Image 1: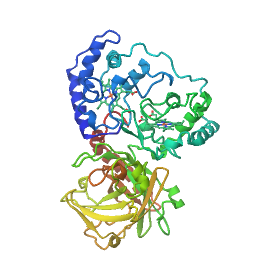
Image 2: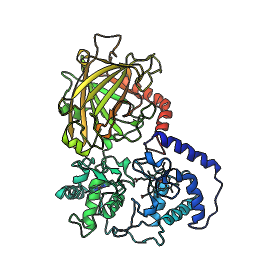
Image 3: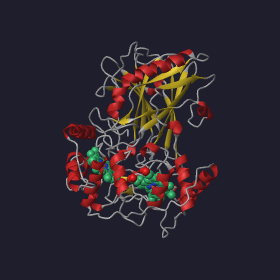
Image 4: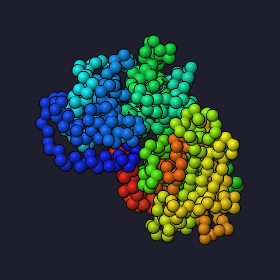
Length: 513
Ligand code: HEC
Ligand code: HEC
């Protein structure tokens, strides 16, 4: 998974240190004693000595580590009226981890399967679980995906707001409700368009299972329960599962090879409205954002993990469309946001970072607000408050301590936003060249211009250094009628990507995205 938080880095190092200390283990099936030994080395940090989810790192994690004394597990295949999971379920989560959370996949570290089974035995002992239920949800006759099945599923998803009540109209988890898990922790309905955040997976069978048995300990209910007004038959649940599976936004998936925002040249005006149909023909590039954990104040929990960018330019201006999923439209002073935000909300914000001069070599400014030798331009948009409209600002920076606000109107920066069904779409427009050639980046065709993005979810109390951000990528103003620079861009991007790997590795907690 792609989440990485400071403390987790430390925990992970501790865990890795343990790798070398452990010898081969010879254990009987479900050996509780061996399970305990491994637990005390690997799991205790987060799950705590007594299994109550209160290890030293536990406090900082959202969602919090499982409290094993309750015996409740989120990802289970036993029917909804069985409280407890099957042993295979626990084994699977230990082996594969829980994407979108800090629960690592252990199969690469605890290579011996028996060790993982011994852990299953030990975890069950915390809740004195003995026999496993041994029964599974009724899968009936699986319905293969098809246009008809997806259409039926879509209808059932929205009927009486069965799922959209929490997951929103487009499935982005933006149903405006304050949901809490059984332990009082804040939970958010899953953004169903981002399959990499699913705790299990977005395979149709996994989705079917979740719909059938619910997610214990959270407000995600079972739809197999005949007592529920929103109950679904087995066949209906397959249709809904096919629909949910179809929601995955593959055009907005992070792809490691995509490191360049490709601005196409157009005749006439650049689109300045996010709803301008011209954007339908733009080339999208999606970047991964990670929490800002490199400088104080760090952010440990963040909500927006990707940003999608496209751009057009003409002989005078460039317009960039920045899109990201945000469950909450944070307008401080708006009673709607006070209902959903945990604390006093700030404005939502996005910012584009560009170097003041295009570097000649590979040396780029420090990726967080530049450095003394390499200043950056920061072009920002803010969502506005109940009493003030959305706004833009321009600043020059030579490090986070040294950010100097400028006159945005003088610079020529303009922005226009639209928020719908859990997605912000913001167009930022600026002239290619400005009068202040010393202090502003002058945009030119056919060069690889470093570009980075930062994003603030105001209702998650993100402001200042608390935000998520990308590393440096590239902006290329593609010259019309020439494929050459484009091909070159890809080659250069490939080379640069190698250099970026260290960063991506550090940003990735475990395994592949
Ligand atoms: C870095 C912190 C961390 C470590 C170390 C860790 N876990 Fe977890 N674990 C979590 C978190 C956080 C969750 C809850 C995720 C959620 O609720 O979505 C979790 C959940 C679980 C679950 C619940 C699965 C379910 O379906 O609800 C199991 C089982 C589990 N961990 C086992 C282990 C075992 C065994 C180890 C040691 C080998 C371990 N964990 C180490 C953070 C950790
Ligand atoms: C009352 C609110 C609510 C309703 C109604 C609801 N969900 Fe959820 N759903 C949630 C929450 C909260 C989560 C995240 C739980 C967690 O913290 O792990 C979730 C998670 C999920 C997941 C993620 C599974 C995974 O592996 O991570 C899927 C898929 C899902 N819901 C599908 C549905 C479908 C389909 C419906 C309608 C048939 C539905 N939900 C109705 C609240 C709801």
